[in-house]
Length: 376
Image 1 (cartoon, helix red, strand yellow):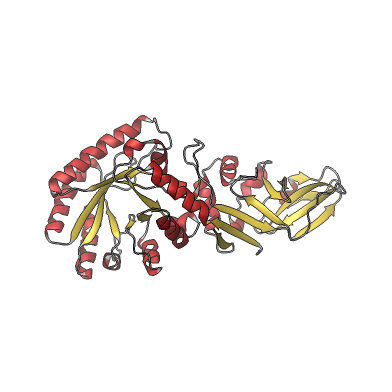
Image 2 (cartoon, rainbow, N blue to C red; image 1 turned 135 degrees about the horizontal axis):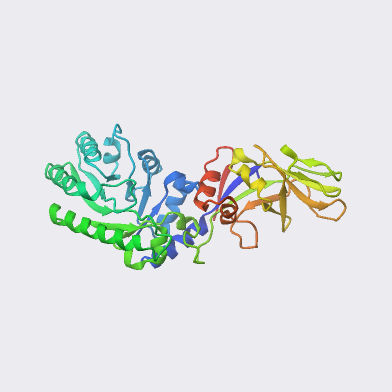
């Protein structure tokens, strides 16, 4: 085992996608693999998800889509967030579906289609209340007119209408029904104006898990693919990522000595300490060291991290000297994992930090110093 690694359990990914596919009933599953598969490795996750029953893949950028195609993945891929100056010809040529939210988007995509010599498959995004990406309702009719013109010229092939919820992690929140009603009106207007059936998709992980009435033609789970629960409902998901390191040094320190920068912790008695070579440069937030509740798993037990998290290392209290802790240099350290053995989890980190587990896994999984390995 290396100094520190992010270990990805592909069997957990398979389990999660199969579970989501069952929940989706007749809706196809689009596994979202943006941000390098939420730090889990986009290509590995994509292949595993497709093997488990997903039929689509979702990404944010053209570069992410190109990575999948370069890896030989031929399944439908939707890429949805783009800049005005981007060249869409390569994406169109390789069959990438493209999100369109404005006439500017549409014009750039159509130019890419002309350069590629084939129509671009597009998903029209309506902003139903997130006020982020998407066409505002007052501009929807104008966008549809422009789409009809480009479709008539053979430059675009409208495939779907889609949106994104603001409060899907609160299944009974009133905005969900408001957004759904706006979406349904936009979808109906699009099918009428364009004279063709269009796929409908609006369910993210939370809505896939809790609102079967919103599954429509496609569901777009992201965080749930990776085994992290977006609604706190105890759903049957298995976390796929664990962060592991090894003990670099074990030593005894006298009572009354300060530990790590700032001496925010002082040894109450003679203590044995373990040095673990992973820190905030590896995605372990510095603030964790100030919570007083940050623990890691070593030799089958949770043990507290003491003192500040440093750039490259943390210090773990093994207890009073001479009490037989059983920890030796080279032992594996689990900073977070699936929690099946009562060990720390990414969700626990998020709770300590007042954030969400999405940030934890992407913050760790995308760090270049950590070796990413897969099992399963």
